[in-house]
Image 1 (cartoon, rainbow, N blue to C red):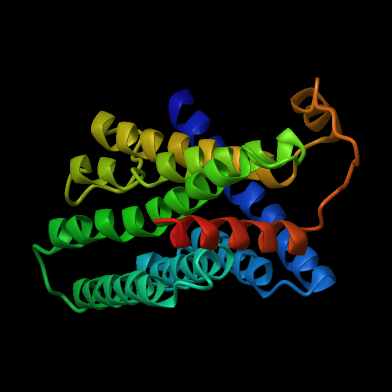
Image 2: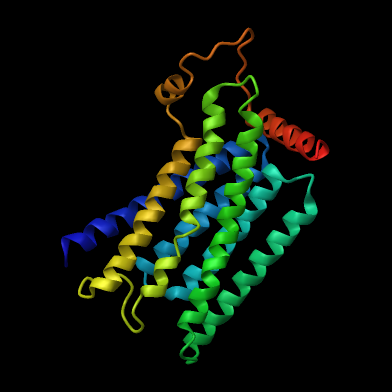
Length: 261
């Protein structure tokens, strides 16, 4: 087994581990603050982790993983809608409908391949790319829009940076499935004896771990890093916003932006 494969495998393990920690954090924080959106994204992250564990640790095949990916992607889209677009239900429903349709098609294709239908790998991958891009570019755009409105508000800089980080790392992970186009058919994903498959595995593992760490940093930001980002920040009245107050502020700013158009 090559050293490079072990490195990439360690990245995947880090990705799954960080997602579990983040998922539990979101669920607990959501329950404590009565924020359904945080509970939903927490369930989504935990589901994605369970899918990877079931497939790669217990060899429960790709269909098992795809079911949990579907739960995760749907949850992530609902989180984005509830957090950033609560007052624009129509566009949020269009996005959610698209995600659900693509997810169901993916499940049908996966089960069809298990039933003996051949030559549909590239069809699945072709649909997997927009599936992933819609989910995470929707989150990236929503976060970036929030950042643009918050950057002129008198709140601590680390809060503004949080949404900038979410936008950046969501955009990065939206490209995660593109390397799948180069995966050789009939070869185990990440096969150490196949350089192309190993490169595909590595590229996807690197993008995944970058997202998990970046997203985790945005939400689980250590105090010293917050203080560093807040360097030079002064205000007459210092106020620590709760998650609910911050979400309300974002909704208010986005609503004002739409009304001013």
